[in-house]
Image (cartoon, rainbow, N blue to C red; front, side, top):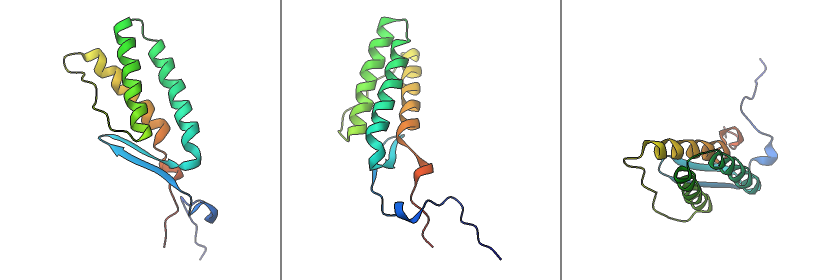
Length: 115
């Protein structure tokens, strides 16, 4: 019988260092050499989203929340901005968090399973 190895990466990446961090629902898990590109791509996507908002107050909140998420990516501790009583701000933060997860959590780049 032939054994197939599923969801494995080449052995050369087995010892690859990873950036990992978790704060609340936000997780970072990706190879160290991908972090800088992920950070830049996240910033571009988040800034484009923030600039697309027509209300100046919503745009201001989006940029403040982006700074908060950048701090999380850098590993610093900062208190989360309050969205209580402001449904639009909650939607804005949810979209920015979605972008954060798309760029910083890469389960497809996890280390191979050790037998």
